[in-house]
Every structure is written in structure tokens, then in C-alpha cells.
Image (cartoon, rainbow, N blue to C red):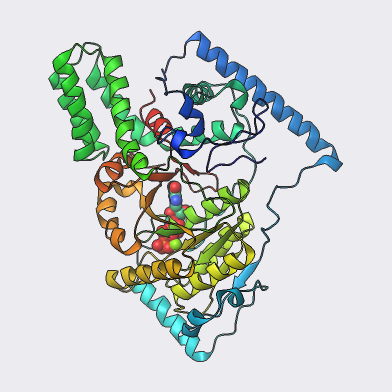
Length: 493
Ligand SMILES: Nc1nc2c(ncn2[C@@H]2O[C@H](COP(=O)(O)OP(=O)(O)OP(=O)(O)O)[C@@H](O)[C@H]2O)c(=O)[nH]1
Ligand SMILES: [Mg+2]
């Protein structure tokens, strides 16, 4: 059994057939392991017991890694990168046409070797026009090349240091047993913590300064307000969290440690509310069913990168996956998607001709997925067209095609948000809510931004569940969102 990153379940010696409990049994917003136990506070000064737990986890991982190294030295047992049978490194070009929309999807997109159709003079001229237009309308568009070095290597065990013990504590606090700690989990928590470093530095230092050593006073809480607003937590979430704290102060004496614990609890509750309302603690493709995930958002926020990372998570978790390159506006968008597809050996459905109809690409992709029994179709969409109106029209059309062609599919419309743009980005992005029928958010670029607090504004103001977070450009820098881990990483001392 491979590790399922969407459901966060993996092979475990003690529980070989560990599967997530039914949604109804899970505690919303928490991983399956958390369902049994309420998370407990993670202290920055691990006590002897926690340290011993971390030590044991480290020793197990170390032994596993050595065993793996030993096996790799034996040539006949060198393991291949596990990929589902259905995933073949195939590029599929679709020749889009309006009539394409009337064709039988079963007959439309058959895998073919990549053939760059020769462009007529008219088509070349149109492509050049589109490129000029692009240069004029999207001056701040990101570099067209996908990030250089893909990190495909398995994570390796670092030193037994403070970051490891913190990661182990976060896992232990969520009810994991020593034998359930995987290198994947430790690796991600390390990345998450590093990613949130900038936000944390501002937030935690000020927070601790504010909290001081004495019992909390109303003035201290006023100071906390400024700190949270500065981290882009937003007025609504700040009012909610601190309102609850003020109420407690009216009733009893609260010392700084308890104040911090209570604040973390409030922040978690804000993040979990939309997740609970969705009735789905974790967003995972349903196995043996067609799932269509649209990635939408303004230009440059990280839609295509997120799609590439999701494709990789899907393959690594044993789902069959296919990419629809439906950003046909930007000249190099298809190429960028193809690079990501190749990295994870996921087929890409695209149309190389200029100004191809994105809805037709989606049409072909769904046809191909239905024909092959693909479980997850990831749809890359444009972030910018000539006008915002055009963009919304295009997204609505794509959405209609999906609903019409695949009424049986589980459709997710994920708004990709650049955390470094803070609340401005959020306001801008909400225009997508109507056109794309948003069901969730992917928060990207948490690394290098001091505005990680915007996650709370997303949950409280947009009321959308955060489903994934990206904390880096690497292929492994995206994981399912977990409010407990997020708040711990945000406020780790
Ligand atoms: N640091 C960091 N950079 C990221 C992250 N996600 C994406 N990027 C970078 O952001 C830039 C834009 O990413 P894209 O994926 O091309 O964004 P897009 O939304 O598809 O852009 P358009 O297609 O032009 O609308 C690229 O340089 C990415 O490497 C992240 O989590 N952290
Ligand atoms: Mg893109």
C-alpha cells in the first residue's frame, strides 16, 4: 500500500490495512489520526517524555533508512518508482474545434505521440498577435519556464534536532504512535515550519512580547489585536479570536501560557469552521470515480505549479491522473503544464493551436478520462484574458462543459490564492466565486511571505475551506491543509 497523501494514511507495521474512518466518524478539519484524540498543546520545551518519544521515532526512521540503503545496494532488489499501471508518460494533443464539442467524447481524445501540428501562416500570425497582446496585458506575468530542479528524490532523514523534535511532537499531539511516524510527515512539517518562518518571526516575537510574564490584561489583548492584524489575519477573525479571549479575561485570571493555548484554539476553530461546514474533513479524490478539479485564480498566483504538485501527490498516492491544459491564452502555458506532466509521468491533454477553446480541451480531457477510467482530471485555467469579463465567461463555460459531460464526476473548483498578496489578493479573487462555483482554496507561497495569517481571513471572510497549502516551488512543497499543524507552525516559539 502506498502512502495516500490526500487521506494521510499509509502503511503501518501495526496497522497494515489502515484506512481512514468514514467521514461521519472523523473530527472535522483533522486528519484521520486526529479523529480519535483531541490535539493537545505542543510546548516548545519538550518534556522528557516527549523527547523520548521523538528519540524512538527518530531511531525507527534511521533504521528504516539504513535498511532501505542496504536494499538499494543489492542490484536485483532496486525498487522502481511506484506508478499506477494506468499512468503512462503520454502527451495528448487535441485538435480543437467548435465541432469537437459535439463529438462523442469516447472517440475524441485517443492517446497519441506528441505531434506539433505545423502552423499555417495565418495561425503563426495569430500566435504572434496573441504573444504581443500577452506582453501588453500581462507585464507582471511570471517567468514562463517552470522551476528548474524538480525534487523527485525521496526525503532523507536529517539530524535529531529541534525541528525534528518539534515535528515529532506535532505528530504525537495528534495521536500518532511512534510506529506511525513516517519520513514523509516529518519532511513536510519541517518544510511547513520553514515556510512559515517569516510570518512566525513577526507574529511570535510580538505576541510573546505582548503576552509578557504576568496575567493578561485588556491592554495586552489590545496589543495582540495589532499583531494579528499586521499578519493579515483580517478584522473578522481577529475580532472573533480576541473577543473570546476578552470574555475569558472578564471571568477569570489568565496567565500568558494559557492565553497562548486559548488563542491557538480560537484560531483553529476559525480555520475549521468552513471545513466542518463542507462535511469533508479532507479533500481526496474518490477512488474508482471520476473527479474533476479546476484550478482557478488571478494570474501568477501559482495555479499551474499547484496543479503540477497535485499531479505528483496523486501519482504518489496511487491515483490515476490526467491534466487538461486549458490555459490556452498564454503562449507558453501548455508547455509549462507539459513539463509538470512529464515530471510525474501524467498525461497532458492539450491543444497547441493559438487561441484554442479551453472548453474544448476540457471536453477532450473528460472524454479521455472516461475512456480510460482515470480517477482525477486536473484542469489548468487562465489567470488573465483580455478582460475580466472574458475570463469569467470562459470559466463559466468550462464549468458548464464539465457539468454537462460528466454529471457523475465529483467536481471541485479550487481557488488558488497567493498568500504573499494578503487580503488584497483575497478580495480580488472572490470575483471567481460566482463564475467557477468555488468549493475550496489552495493557499500558495506561504514561504517567504509574512502574511501567512491570511489563511484565517480566507476562512472567516470567504467562508471557504482551505484544502491545500503550498510552501515552496518544489514538487513536494504542497500538502493537504491541517489546521492543527498550521497553527502550531504559525505560533511555534
Ligand atoms: N515561493 C513559492 N513560489 C511559488 C509557489 N507556488 C508557485 N510559485 C511560483 O510562482 C510563480 C507563478 O506560478 P504559476 O504556477 O505559473 O502561476 P499561475 O497562477 O499558473 O500563473 P498564470 O498561468 O500566469 O496565471 C512561479 O514562479 C512559481 O514557481 C509557492 O508555494 N512558493
Ligand atoms: Mg498558469
